[in-house]
Length: 350
Image (cartoon, rainbow, N blue to C red):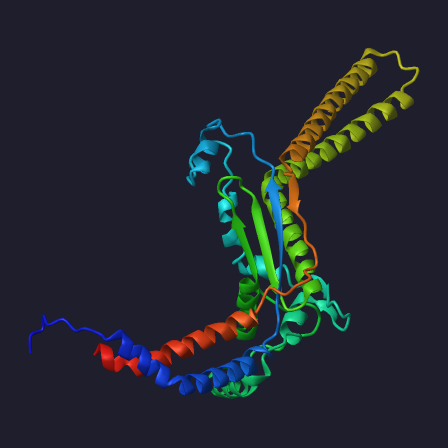
């Protein structure tokens, strides 16, 4: 047989064959519709909430407007003076940090119906709904895994004090990954706008966590940006307190000497008084200098503290974000029709 021989398909015969098998399609559509509804209807609904932040731009970039122009084309110019080690493009990676995720567990959440009010860790661990049709499968897999996995650490029930982000149990690690899948962060490279989105089965919890994650991220950025300034304030506060202590000692020594030598006319007494007075002046100048430096570092701390503008605040969602039940059923009908149609007409294309 010539391999280059072209096969022709009689479209009229194909259409006629499909029409003759229309009753099979009717049965397949009915069964597909019923089975799709049985599967998708018990699937728990989930909601979505999003906030948008505009961070304060740092004015210490020695590159002037060059970095801003480059960022509009999706490029980041490194090596510039004054650039943070954690710039906005790295914030999405921060949301995968165990320390960041564990820091969210203590947030108090309440469901819209008010039947659950607890911390986010307990809510995610004990109050998540699932499709009841998957219960036999989940029970079987749990039993199978129980034969191969070591006994997990037991949650002590006192908040999340027992959760160690450095060394977690298998259950806590799986729960952390579940939370990571529900929380996402994206950055617009052109505008540097931060978008935070949270998915959850309860609309009120969804909005609460979105707002809390936003605050958690702001606190983290503020702590990072001001860590050096806080160290400077603490350092100069310590030096100022030490200078004040030295000044008080010098003042006490000078006052005590003057009180006990009021009528002294000997030169040695006057020389000692002048010496104590000179030491007191030195201590006072040192205290004044440390006080000035302390106030300057406090001003620098305020300058380093970034500000955020909320472009879109968190609101309790009204409509669920998914699952899209009608689209799922329609997709299953299209898939079943395609498969059945292929099985019927494959004799014409082989």
